[in-house]
Image 1 (cartoon, rainbow, N blue to C red):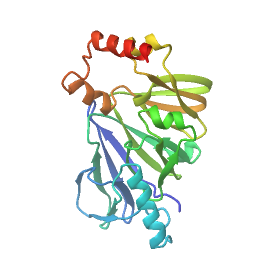
Image 2 (cartoon, helix red, strand yellow; image 1 turned 60 degrees about the horizontal axis):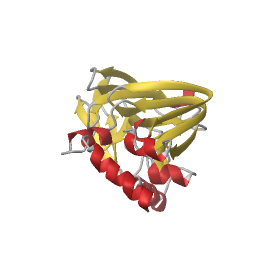
Image 3 (cartoon, rainbow, N blue to C red; image 1 turned 180 degrees about the horizontal axis):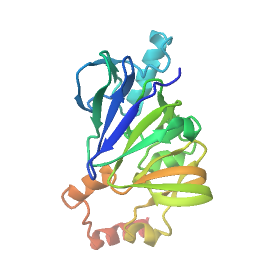
Image 4 (cartoon, helix red, strand yellow; image 1 turned 60 degrees about the vertical axis):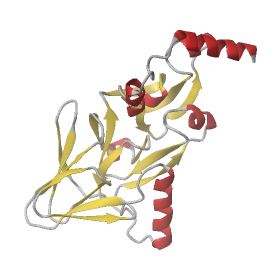
Length: 256
């Protein structure tokens, strides 16, 4: 299914939202609860599925819903359609402060891989599905988890990054990143998780036990403040683990 052609404006600075402009009968899909406001003529309907395969039967829709449940997302997606005359707008905001990244899927080869909570909204025709990381280490130890999301289509999609977004264009290079800071990457980029140096560095370095590695050719999007790190900073003692406690952990590891 060819994606609907939508126009958009991203507004705000540190806390952004995207305003989508729709012509009559154009539709944009979004995560449940992402809508900020909608103007006259916009009608919305919650559906089980992204609408990219209208001929899919009930069983196919149930499978799609089950896959979204596995990724931790709602099994329902809201469809916003302009039923009036002229043009009208609907706006979407992410659930925490950060930056909205517009993606032209056609320019990205038709698909990208994103962390499971990064998707915000997209033109109707965009397919949202699971993406299993083939390397178990990336699943057990990374902030992204074993299951990521794949966005496929030829239209516009919008993903959300916590804090500031950093875009890298890899040309056969390797980039090592804090595991929770990976937002998304082009299909074809090799994503894995490796040990963060030696045992001493892993415990006392403050960078965590593992780092994500991205290798290949294509674009990579990172976030400066993943929600997991923000929660850790705000939790009692979360960011202030005493060195004595780390020392005790090191001794325990050496004695084991």
